[in-house]
Length: 254
Image 1 (cartoon, rainbow, N blue to C red):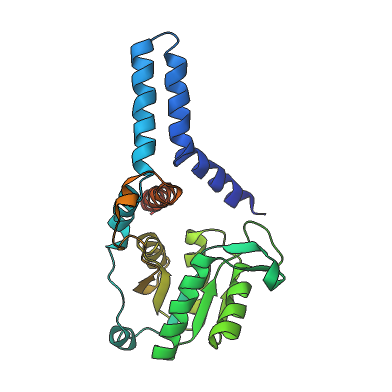
Image 2: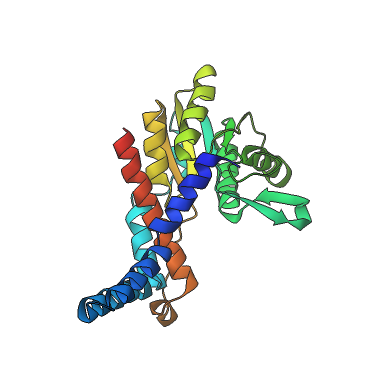
């Protein structure tokens, strides 16, 4: 398991909902022992924020601030893009997939692979998959992705980048492999919410990027149920904050 990955994940747990707001509620209740009005106000404010961020409507609105930055890539635009390769970024693994012998790609990764396979067939460009094993495991995410692309989609993989532990390393290590192959312009496939951060990192690594976002989640029609707190809403809100923090850290790094 990567120490860098573990530290980042632990920091994320404390900085993102729900734990950050739970801590604020606890702090408010502690303050209320001495300053009842201020302490209770802080606790109620944090609780209200937690309830709001747990509603799917709010979560989708936050996601849309990122997903709306890049439109879908039309097949004709992909063919005319002058790209020299397709890069598909990993989005996690399932380490409890008993039906696949214990490990396979997670659903987020599978969505990216499906679209990447489609683009590979449309453009006939070679494919690079990127993802290490920061959370442990027998094989890198890139290897699991390559297996899925060949076995499930019939698409060959030319390059495997299996050492990265985060998006910044995805970009740096992939750029190194591709530069050695003479590739300067790529079609980048990742989830729509992740695309702004990923594209910025690949540009910083020296590659020209044609964004190919997939797995749009904030565009669906809502029902009255989506105005009530639910686990899905909290998950989407947390994902949006995670990406915005990542974007700000990336800008600070340069």
